[in-house]
Amino acid sequence: MNKKAMLTIGAVAIALIAVLGFSASQKTSAPTVASLEGDAYERSYSPSIGPDSAAVTVVEFFDPACEACRAFYPYVKEILKRHPEDVRLVLRYAAFHEGSDTVIQMLEAARLQNLFEPVLEALLKDQNQWASHHSPNIERAWELATTVGLDTFQAKETIESGKFDQLLKQENADIRSLKISKTPTFFVNKKALESFGPDQLYSLVQKEIQNKK
Picture (tube, rainbow, N blue to C red):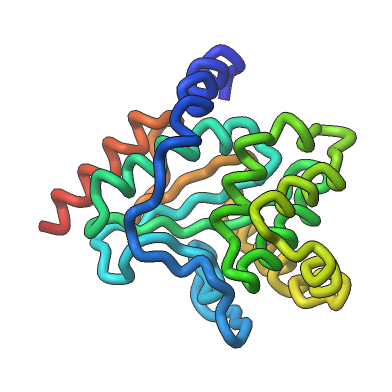
């Protein structure tokens, strides 16, 4: 994504990120038993937001340290808000930035504490305080997670146990399988965007909704 477009989207995102909320049902709590069932687009462990009966599934491969992912986040939320019964979001991890693998595990540990969304939003809202292409401030990321109630001692203990190692391996394997090289990357009912942008994403979502009616 070019810098000018990113800055334009980012300016709107900063204003929206604090006010928009998901209204759809969610599967952001961790499954009881970790499973790798599914396909390269969605695994059974993948966090999702929206009803399972939704006609349209948007799969987003994202990196919590990615500026463009942060910028797109409120647009994706707005799509869910406008179509709460028709659209479901599935989040997949792409740890392309240094330190992102740790932050992804932090998000998974937050799922175990039913705090996935609050931690995700805290990390995105103040992404500039911890994310860096070369020297991320992971301690600051932990501090931000603490502000929304994460038990960081328990979370770090879970990460150190290796609980999420297989998950990260599977995410990386699926990224390679789908030839994903940048974030965010979106698929709508397993269809890639013809061109990159929030309007293009929404246009494809609307088209798929109409096709399913």
